[in-house]
Each structure stands twice: as C-alpha cells, then as structure tokens.
Length: 385
Image (cartoon, rainbow, N blue to C red; front, side, top):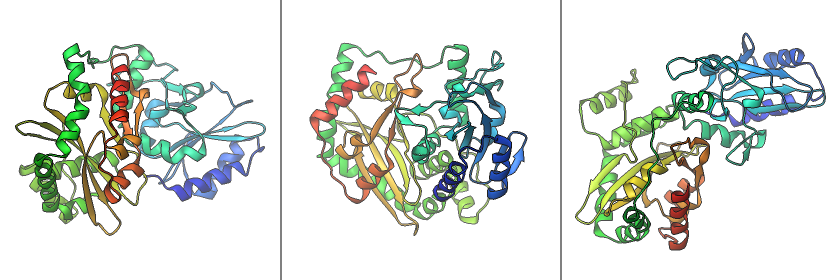
C-alpha cells in the first residue's frame, strides 16, 4: 500500500537538505525523524525502505544492494537516495524498476537468488514515466501488480540471457482476420441477449458473496486480494466454503491458487465464446491494475466466436459494491489501457495495464460505446508488438 502523505513528507524532508553532501549525516536525520529501523545499509519502517548512496554526479554505477536483501522490502516502496554535492535525488528501486542484476550474478536463477544491482541498473523511466517523486505513486501502484517471482524471472532472462519458457503467438492469415473481426464480434455481443445473461450471472455471483468481498477489499496485498475476490465470484468448491469461513471469522486464510489464464470466468453461448477478466477497484486506494498478456489475448481472439470482456468490481470505504461488465474495446477502458513493453521478453509482446481512474469512470459514469476506428488501431498495435 502506498502512503501518499508520508512519502510526500519524506520527499520534502530530503530535498530540504540538498547540499548536505554527507550520506551518513542525512541517513541519521531521516532515520530519527521517520523512526526507521536500520538493517545494515537499509533503513525501513512500515511504509517504505530507503538506501543512501553517494556519488559525485547524478550518474552512478556503485553497487547498491543484493537482490536477496531487496526481496525483503519489495512489498513496500524501496527508495535509493543518491547524495551528490548539490542535490539529494530519490528514485524507486523495487524489482519492477531494475533492468538487470550486475554484480556476482553469474549463478542467478529463479531458484537461486544471487547477485547485486548497481545504480546504473535502476530505470530512470518506466514506460516513458520518469522515475522522480511526482510519479512515485503511479510507479509503485504499477509495481504492486507484479510478484517478486515474476520480476525475478524477467531479471534472470535479462541478466544471464536465459531463454524464457513462453512462446510468441504467430497467427496465420486466417487467424489474423479472426482477430481483426473481434471488434465486430464485441459490438454484436454487447447488443445481444447473451450479454444480459452474462451480466446477470456475474452480478448474482457477486451478490451471493458481497459481504466476503467487502472484507477481502481491506487485504493489503494487491495480488492476494485480487485472487481471493476472483475466487469468491467464480468458484464453487469446498475451498471456497473454507475461505468464506476464514474471512468471516478473521482466521488465517487458506492458500489460493488461481490459474494464470487470460480470463477468470469462461462462458460459451451458441454464437459467442466469452472470457471475462475480473478487475477489483478499491475506491479509497490508488491502483493501476495489470491487464492481460497480449499473446494470450491474440491467441484467444483468433477463435471465431471469441469475445473478451472486463468485469469491474468497485468497492468504497463503506463496503458498498458496484459492478460493470464491458468490452475490452470499450472507449473508456481503451483510453486507459497502456501496453507495457518493459515486460516483453524475446518471446513476448508484453502486457497491458489499466488506469485506475478509467475503471472508476466505467462503473460510475459508463459510456458503453466502442470507437470502431480506435479499436481497430489498437488491434493492429497489438499484432505489431
């Protein structure tokens, strides 16, 4: 979770000491003022962790930290403060913002966390968003979408040139035509009786567990929260009953494993095969949820009856729940959909990310229209990626 007020205070505190030119003195001041605990070179608290480094200029290649140590703090904003003679510069250095691991990393594997990262390994911008204080909230809420394990797999590939396990989807000419026609299928489905059936089905599922969804909304871990709410809505088994009982009685939650598929809920009709991705939007928290893997999307859309939809579940501070089912090509959603090429390895087109504000508009000020031209341009952009 991102504590906006506290981190803005941290930024102000550190910038007010520009020119101190002494990382030890600055680190002590920050530790005392924010009541942080020291763990060797890292200072941490409930809401953030920070490592101080010194350099003669804003470019530095010093070794910053071991990857194994970063792992311990990767669930909260992890800052590197670069102390230069004139200015103190802050940047986020969570695993999402590392290009690779540099020092002693030859043995780095997904099952063997080795090596350290240098200052030059920290991204100064993430998908054209500059890694500076004004963007910290957006950057960290983007980082929250990815587990440490996902980032570790990417870093192993980038560091040691290990071939990824994924495979880029290469559609045939027939499949490309089918993918392009998915815009027409989406428009047709939204006007159909089947759309009302699917929307009603999902709404009934939410109503059946709305109390439990409202409890789960306050779970801090973004990925766990999403998996639990998805499971509550889509699944009927003994584990769901156990999960409901644990949520109601504030007991330790069982392990929830959800398949890493394109959508969370599949339903087939005579003329349509639908995949629906459930996206939770906690209205009192900042978030920019992860979207879909583009190769998985294109593989699905290459089927003749395929329709891909997003079901937004919005929850406010009073635990009131509102929902909306819309097409991936919905004008409001598409305007807030970004392609994240940072996650595109040699065998991947990358993933998408949604602007949380767009999800809110879809729920509270819904415009059901699809801009045919914009939607088709987006399809072509995905095919070219």
